[in-house]
Amino acid sequence: MAGPTNGIAKSLAIAMLGAPIYCAWGSGDTSWDSLPVPLAWSDTALRNELGRRRVDTQRFCTPNTSGDIILPPSANNASGKWLLTDTPTPFLYLKTGFHVEDSPGPQIREVGYLLGVALQSSVPSSQHYFLPADVLTPGVMFAGNRFVAITRTSGLTQWFEFVIDLSGVLQ
Image (cartoon, rainbow, N blue to C red):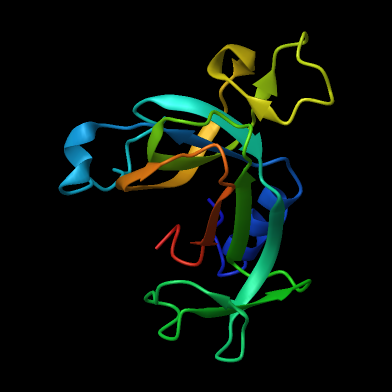
């Protein structure tokens, strides 16, 4: 049997960025408002999906103290600053905006990123926000987050941005 090399994380990142990635959001569980329960390795879907969109920006990035993307520090990036790059890295930057007309009103407590999504054939190509009924195949959730409720209002575009670190996937 052949063994993987450290290039496998970059290879996975290249393959993932070559496919449409969707961001789903959901209302989750009201008990998370006091203490959100982290996603488990075995979680395959959101607890209560409300809808999804194609990711607006999906790019490679790299830790860089001069980077203009600032997220919470992590094990592989103590500064929390990231720089976009066209050079393949094991770090995927994903940014999604849920717009004013996308399901205003509900509280959001969870997001998930999915590959392999198929929409119903009746969904018009001009549609950008998809309800669960618009989805034929939900895809595979490969990352996500849970948090204290965010209340949606009709005048707000809610942005979610994450860096997915694939460098330790097989370790």
